[in-house]
Length: 211
Image (cartoon, one colour):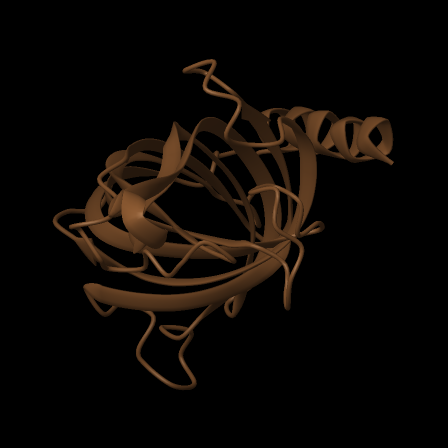
């Protein structure tokens, strides 16, 4: 399955870089932010006392219509959680999760500035998306506190772009993924582990190629 997914991604990259017609447009963005964990050890979403892990983001959007883009995106950064808890007479100890995660995903993006909900020419362009990802987790600190390996995920997200010109834009992107396994943190209980990535982005929209 992993090889099939990678083949699809490579094929799509070839298409978007070679199929610039009057009906297509390519947008590229990059940025930085933070990513956090939610799982059996605890909830780190927006909890900066437990998790402070940076992430670098890259996105490629391919225009397929007024309402939809196909979105490819990748993130690289550290990933973890630190949760103090009581353990008998030993006092406070720490339950630690520390790793590095490389994530790549493909999604279908719905653009709200599509001429139906909001004007297409509007500078502020919000969107939502859903898709699937592959997540490579490594024990970068050699602490043996995570189960390294490749995890698939279902992903949802939202974001907004603000156009500062005909080509450039700045924006914000939120991505939430649920892993295909609950074993990342050595604890299997309840739903599978989650991650969240928040990024500030700078983007370039490539105009239609004139034939």
